[in-house]
Image (spheres, helix red, strand yellow):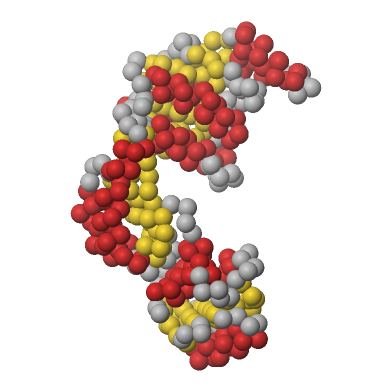
Length: 384
């Protein structure tokens, strides 16, 4: 199975002026084609540094994909950098200039002289027309390596990757396999606790098992490589069964399932509705649930976080006023090192007060409290 690295080019990426969406898209395309991705690198608009990064990537992998730096301006250096990396000159291709002129005419414009730079590609490279933009792309096969340079404009890059590059890579490397991922979402258990329970599975080679921690949630990722989707499923299924047995009710869903959707399902199954009272969370809980008009009755943001008994009384009164079966109150009390999180839950079956402590970054306390609250709602269906 071939290996690849992605190089995103642009000083604006390094300075944080724009967010890189190209690398995640390319990573998914490579994964779906069954190509191992070894590394993703971002480098500024400097010819020598780009060339060095390309050379280093070729020492580690078979395929190098660059995005960005194919425009007509002086600070679009990818063509020169690729040529420098492999020790060849750039060559002017009149047919590429013809393609550029045609593209501009379709836009009702005339190319300027600096657009001629886009008609130059490294010697020996194969040019590929860009039907959705002005910059031609190219593929350069160098020794045992393949260097592919794509534009940085996301819609252009995505179109060319899907319609030109992926078919080329499948044919070039005789790819018939794929990489399939199954995500199991957990809440209520920390990353270290999960690792302690499933550490023996994390050393498997195919499928592999890995963890990704979020604020109040942890994803368990199962990745399988095979020749078909059914073969990947056969590898993933027994590992998923083991994980579900070990992690039990801490798993709330898989793949695209969200915690808020699963939590609301537990209310919907009982034909209940919910009213929310929150303090110190910036309205985040209300915003997440407000779109579910059939279940969500109303929400109130308190200016001052109440104490536990007060929160319970306020939540119950608010619930009754809005004729909701479920009342949920959440209040964060800030502290120097720990944030105290108070939760009040009222249903036709119970009244419950919960006190939790969050010792992470204060800015993430609302999201952590949100996930803990949704988990409590989710578990209503298990408590009766």
